[in-house]
Image (cartoon, rainbow over all chains, first blue to last red; front, side, top):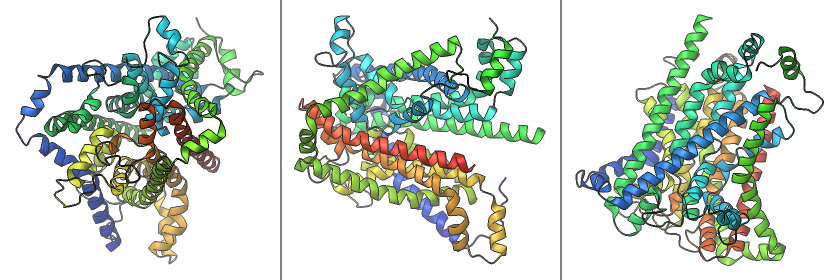
Length: 282
Length: 280
């Protein structure tokens, strides 16, 4: 769509370009690069050292478990809520659609406090009852999962809703007029057309979930080898003057995030190519 | 089990008397989703407000006007406002360069923009510390100062304005700008009269998001700011220390203040989006 105005680039263009590159270099690229070089200052020893420490391996496993469970929950919840918001009318829909974004703008510490007030075993609203049933939330894995699910709740919805709005209902109506059940229409028509938006949302949710720190710090109790996640281990290592260890763990986490961005980048390019190919065909 | 076509159609075209068009299975889906959303988000957030309200207005006011807390709130809000202003200007410029400029390596910039969003906040703090900490190769040691708060906010909020403005800028019709130019408008006039009005809602939305994010920020500051009272301590840190001192009512009071800010941002966003939808 862009018609490049060749040969009309003035000084302003170059000044802007220089400013943007410098800004991003100083704020993001250089600091990130330094973490990479700091990690490998002493060779790969600090990185492989992570996997020799059983407590760190446990932290990695805990982070991965919490992130995967939270992502599964948020994906199912996200697809259902997106469908409801776009395809159906019901009372309270506008409020729901506004409130669903709330978790993105709530401080992680407030998230932790909120869960603590309701699910704390001793004096929470529901905590004592749940504990009576033998189900501990706070200072245990369920609390970590809930905190993680809270902070990444809207990410799938934000990707899927615009796509659902754009594809419209024609194909779905055609399918149901040909006798397909609601379930069949969903699996055969709706899901394939929102597939990439869902994948995109999943990647973003996973990345956000793996990196959650503040909310998890409040609800987990941060017990070594039990409820200490990877991000909490980074803090602990750094404060205990094990900078190499902190850098190595950070490098690991940062690699996952950068990988997630690259995956998203590839998906976006692919979807855009698809769209333009379809546009050209029609 | 196939749904009668006729029913489906009327449901889609006009709302029924009860003002909904849910089938049994979607109704169950709505019920379960709402239950989970309430248990995870709505009830816990209400608990925060209830805990703050339990002490009454005077207790709430006393907590948030506590000298150390007030200093933390002031630092947080001022830094967040400053960062938002920087983001409005720099974010719009970055979006502009990403959409309208072409040069080798531009794709890399696209990736860099998203890094602050995907990077775990604790890692973000460590990352900033490597260039702006004690061993800074630039000789800029911001660690444990108020400046570090500004820097951390700037890092974590980088993508918001850029990612809101970019798609709008892509949709803008360059013909209008060319028409204006051919009628003798200079670049500044074109930007102010034609481009800026179309970008304004997106910029406002991005600004609101980056302000909300900055006000609640915690993770990236842990290692960077040193959390020195009256100097580099932010609101989230005050809430956490109240929690750790088993003063949940106090923590809830400060948290309620942050929640009010988040809600205000949500309302602003909703209004802006509705305004845009009406126009489009």
